[in-house]
Image 1 (cartoon, helix red, strand yellow):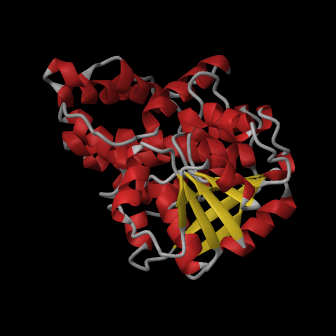
Image 2 (tube, one colour; image 1 turned 45 degrees about the vertical axis):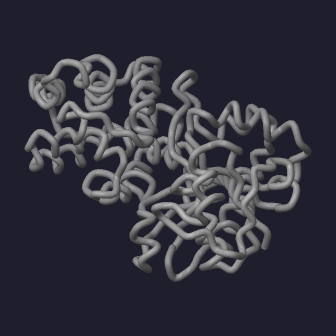
Length: 329
């Protein structure tokens, strides 16, 4: 099987490694010329996560990557997807299968990532999403995990899951693409909140954060037309360990450093996702207190310049305790 992976950051490079080394597929890994992640792989043959296997073709030629494979896996920053799709659809890709291995909501529109592909003319039966728990550092040590594949097409999600599975990754079929995408994106927002708790010494509150967070996300999923219970599946609650607790979690680390008044220099998708989800909540008249608190901490309390990061962040989170008493469900 020929696979092209577009993106060579941490997940893109891992997916290329997984497809080539574990699944023994023919793999092309694309990155834009001059971009840091691509140049590191080009110049050193490895990054901090994986070593570029000799069977993988590394290229900055987008047309080559698109035309040489039937399955295209995209793993880039979610906020750059719409502009990237304009470049992709400049070529004849009507027969290609697209698998989105990325988590986020478009900040400017509130659109799910699969919706962006639909709006760029990709057939809905050729779109799948691959999400769920797992850290590259664990996978490359041979530590397995479970993930989920979802799609508008039952046939496609089964095809992808069956052909991408291994002893390292057990796949489940998703049955609610709205819930799968919203849940996967929203867990990054909860990860930032968990990091703030860690950085402020309120670790015991991560239990209530998990319970109330999943309930909040379930309400949003239901309002958008998905299944409430999707928030309790692998895409969201099932990903909490790797997002709310792991030392490898970028979003948890972002929140932890923000609480200390420090900047985290790597991508934390939950920052812009908090803004997108807040606007969706406002649009649908939903009460999303945790989402709104993370948004306020990231965009309004300005912990990086106040000189009192932990206090500012925790004041935002602790305001949740001032809300009126209500039934849990």
